[in-house]
Image (cartoon, rainbow, N blue to C red; front, top):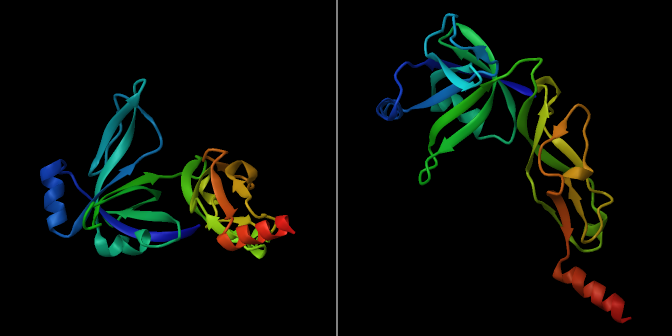
Length: 218
């Protein structure tokens, strides 16, 4: 997985009024979620913008309110690739993170909010990885059309084990046949999608149906 360098500044003001003011400045409000639970009440020192959010059973996680610029995140978001983000906070502290969620404006598609998840070498994460089809399917040679039904598969693994893409070989995929999530396996990766979900399929075209009818009639 490639690495993306991103600068961010902490923000202490929260709420609708504060985030609206941030967006008016051409900036994007963001949040960094920690992944390591801490005991409550928390006795440690918090950095600027950090707060504790309770999760369950007397434990919480550290959440950091941030602000980033449109220019800095454009190449991170509008890309077919996935990245490990080296997030530098206030020009001093750097943490490793991944994109967790992005909210877009329903009309303008402007970025409204970004969620990051802090990652660690020894803690698995779940991430959506692009799917690439490899080979010339037998069903396509017979006149069918190859369709990619799922463009990204969700995998669980240590971030160092997550590849830039998942290759699916379709050479033996016949006419009218499908490859499901349960048919796939990759070293050191757990596929999170439902096992019966169809990843790709060779569908019958009108031409292929005509060939089948002609073959049956003869």
